[in-house]
Image (tube, rainbow, N blue to C red):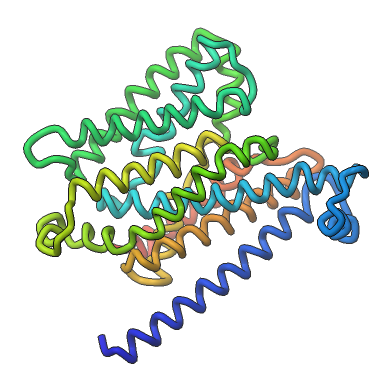
Length: 340
């Protein structure tokens, strides 16, 4: 591609990122301004400018909606970026946290924390969910690395399916005999931003922000892996070390996001494909586009759930399930599942 064409394309894609940033800011404002409780825009703006929590509207805005919105931004971006990384490192267009055992690991450790330690509430067992997600990711990579060829995409996919099946069986066996564990798991597993206040946000934000920074810097290695292992080695890439690093990034991002919000479906699976439609096959662009698109989608789905379910609310996992399935079918139907 001529230098002038490359420059024009880079300029166009940069402008696209700027548009997505503006859209993210708008979605964040909607998330703070609208909810199941009716608060006027004047009261919202006053609360944001004065940081006044003495009034009911100020307390709802500052203590509930702002942390929820910020968590939606970082968790959505983490799920989108980790989905793109996972699809790139496994060269599997269907790879996502659910398929690769991450959600199953988090759920299994949540159930164990409830059953063995008697923990209750998301703030109590969030770190067990994080640990379970990380352990499942390590287990998938360890199993997928067995054999002469190491961690090939096919073996990683099979290992993910096996670990998911095994951990899901353990979880099901426990909750079938423990009503308390079933109730708590059902509350966590629906996928939600509700009730996630400042302590949870501050607990997971460092992991999500560091993981995002590392993921966004991994565009070139992912481009190398996309060419195949032999070509990547010929280009000077240490394939085994790169895969370990990328799986560690996925473990941190998906583990922290899943622990805080529960399993959020379709975001990490669908949005990287949308990003490829918009910006092509270069992971240096796919990663930031996936992160921003996913954050926007998660916030808008959360706002829709609060508004449509008023005076209660529909959890964001339910809304995304309804929206994500037809979107994914459309991508497949019209041939827009981009090649990895």
